Length: 155
Image 1 (cartoon, helix red, strand yellow):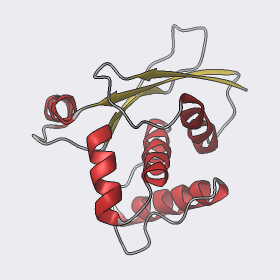
Image 2: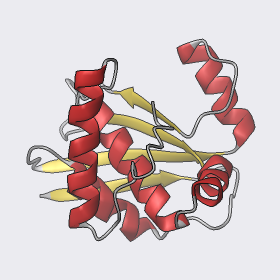
Image 3: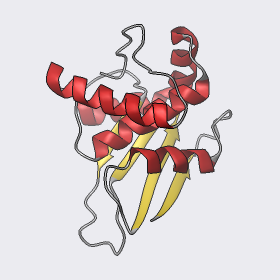
């Protein structure tokens, strides 16, 4: 399987994990095999996150991760869609939740990738299933359970 990460950081935000690390997290979150997957991850500031969240979800606030499923019907490669991650919120949440920044980045990428594959947390059953899968994936990568302490900030 070949995974290519299109990491966009137009705002020039500092302190991001290395591009290769994003690839590791994306691959770990895949629930099926792809011959050739191209995955876009756009890292944004709070203003862009807020605008996208307002425009596409009707919520006038920045958010940590947004997932926009794609339609790869006319492409010669697989594309699940786009992830948008708000770097300043990742940093602030990691500090507030007492977890490492890298672990929180990993969680947001895994969480977003699961959304792009059709997972959701709209009700308690779905949330439990998705959280268990996230925890298993993150454990396989060496990260602690992000939901210890009952923090469900990704809902």
